[in-house]
Each structure stands twice: as structure tokens, then as C-alpha cells.
Image (cartoon, rainbow, N blue to C red; front, side):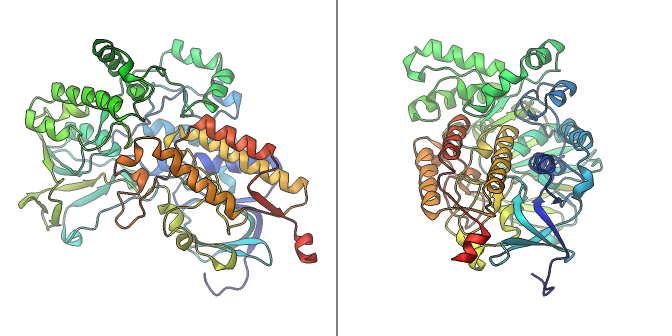
Length: 544
């Protein structure tokens, strides 16, 4: 931090981030009558949907479920135009929420938080921004999202390239014209799979550089019908309650049969039906797809055969068919004509799985010994997920403990909410919670409600400090890994495991035990006097 001795202002809470988490937090803090400052590095509300505005960006959770549930009038009044909403409409929705509850007046936009240090004597956090402003707060909440720090590979010659470069996670706000251009797209994860079909329709030629093929399922997106909308809005309260205790925080058609308990003919019929239904329904075709390798193999081979059926060139089809990890253990992708795109004359696929891109040149790049020339290069290379954005801030807790140093071997949290030695600091959907393996909005609401309820608990009992115990944290870290190891997830080199970031510790970061299971664990902890947390009152501490 700077040498400035004191904070220039003081509030009850500082929130970093103005996406779904930050807005709901601000709304709830206001209801409690607590003073709050929100710092947002973007120019407006929206979080990940503010930055991820690349062509084709779309949510892979149904619109009627990917929205706030805390206000019934809001649920009834807002209308979605499609079953799976595109980025511009989600951003408009978040903006509508900010306006509806007059939230922008307490948000500082275009402000980067650089540091947050805990003062043990004062029992307060001092939060510093890039401009040098320092704000004192009792509560410090990181509401910065799980996938908000773009990862650009370090390529030799990057600065020598004279064309345009873009990252799907930090896309320009103005429309980018690719007409007549030769484009490279590096990466075939979720954002790559969404952006490639759209760019292929506009650009003269698109060359896709693929390190690892991904399983992708058709979205079967359709315009929202009044009938479908009413089927939700007429019973929203009941549906939302069911979602809160479901496996993923969203309602899906889940088959309770094991894959090998039925005949081959019936199994293929189920898969065909799920494929035609669209969306992530395939992973619920049988109840053991993510826990049994044999069951998973049947679903994976079905999808590979669909790829072989769609892609006309057999060599390209095999390159696009994943074979090195179980289906669903990397983020499942939902697409709109992705595999069909490779049947276009203006799209080529380059396999870089055994020989990565060697370097960039003034005109393009070199891969597999071949030099390519491009007018623009699009990096669809993902994020430093779960921990990257937390580490972008110099967070120091009790005893000047740096969060980055404490987590050198991987994130250590209790419930994905708090970390020992960092009193009164909360992480919304942090590592160790269902977060990215759930309907994020549902998990966000649960975490925010937990934070607010715990602060109410503190005030009612005269406490001013809340922190998990070392023992509770250790047990939870072990439990998160035990839950993951009961599944096939650790068998994939995914960003869930931190495998996309060189040098990042390899361990499964989200909690895979289920949204409903996790919620019940949290409820049980609260009912048992916030078991695993310790509270202190300043007066009691002074007496000691």
C-alpha cells in the first residue's frame, strides 16, 4: 500500500465487483441500513457479461432460471426473448436491476482495487484503489466472479505482430468489423465454440488453432414463447425452491437409471432424445455418467459419433472428437452450429496438441513449422479461474498474511466463503463452493444471504469479528477433494483443476457435492451456532 497513513473515508462494507453478486450484496446491505461502497473496474454494471461481449456470447443456463429470485415483482415483470439468452439481453437485465433498485449511485465505476489490508487493532480492512484512495471498512467482500481474469498465452514475438488482437473475455464495446479478413481463433473452449460460427459467417477465412477438442452439445435455442414463460412465472416460487435444493441449482430432466442397466438400443434412444432436446440434457441421460467410466464412455462415444456424422471431412471430424478425457469433466459446451461450421470452405482447423504455436510474427504466427498470415487474431484462451481475480488484489489478513502465500498449494477456504486469518472477508462463490458447477445466480443469492445473515447474527450478539477456524477449514478442503475424487472430474486437465495456467497447483477447486447438499450443509452449520466459525467482540478481546 501507499505511505498515506489513514483512510480518507469509512464505511461499514466495501464490495469489489458490480455483477450479479455485487448488486445483490449492495441491495441487501442497504436493507440493513449499512453504509457501502462498491468498486467496479468496468464502466458499468454487469460483471462477466460486461466484459464477455464477443459475437455469439450466450448463457448456457435457461433464461427463466438464470435470473434473480429475490424479488417476485422483478421475476414477473422481466421478459426474456429466447430460451437461452444472448449477452446483450443479460447485460440489459442487469442494468434494469441496477436502475430498478437505484444501485448505481453507490458504485464507483472504472476503479481498480489494488490492495486490501486487515488492521488487527482496529479490526477493520483498509482498501486501496489504483488512484490511491483508501477506504476503511469493517467488512470486505470480493464479489469479483470466478472467470473474470483473462488468460493470454505468452507467445514469443507477440509485440511484433502488426495486426489486431482480441480476447473473448475483454471484447471491445464497439462492433468489430471482420469483413474480408483472414482471422485466427486460438482456443476451442466455450467462448471459442460460441464465437467461431459467427466469425465464419463474416470473415473471408477463419483458421482455428485447437490444442484440446471439447465436447459440445447443440443448444436447440428457440424464441421464448408466452406459454413457456407462463409455465415458469405461474409457479416461480415453487420452482425456485426446488432449484435451491437441486444438484446444480437449476431444474433438469435427470434419469435415475445407470447407463448400463438398460439395453444398448434403449441407451442409444435416450441419448438421441437428449441430443434433440438440446442444452446440457445429455449429462443427465443416466445417473452415473460422471461417476462411472464405463457409463461415461457410452455417452462420450455417442457424442463423438454425432461429430463424425456432422463434419464431412473424416480427418477434421476425428480431430474435433475428444478422446483423452471423460465427457462432462471439462466444462460442457453448448453451441449453435459449431461442428457444422467446419463444413464451410472458409474454415480450417489446425491441430496444435503435439506442437504448440511456436511464435508470432509481424504478419501472423508460426505453428507446426508453417507460417500463417492473419489480419486479426482472436484469443479464446479462457481465464485464470477461481483464484486469478482474488490474486490481482494484494489481500493481506491477520499477521500480514498474504492470501496468495497462504494459498500457494491451492485455495484454502471454509465453504468457499471465508479463509482463516482473513477476518470479516467474504468471497462470493469462492473456491470450495459449488460456484462454476452450478447455476451461478442461484449460488450467488445463497452466498449473499449467508453473508448478510451472519452479519445480522454478529450485530445481534455484539460481535465485530467472524473467521473460520483452522480445523473447520482443513476439514472442508479435504471434503471438497474427497467429493471430487468420487467422480471422474479429476481425470481431465481442466480449468476446474487449474490446469490451464502454467505453474498453478492442480486440485479440484469447485465443490462438486451438489447445490442442494451444500445448502443443507450451510443450514446445518448455522443451526449449530455457526459451527466452524469463531466470533469475537472487541470489548471481550480488550479484557483478555
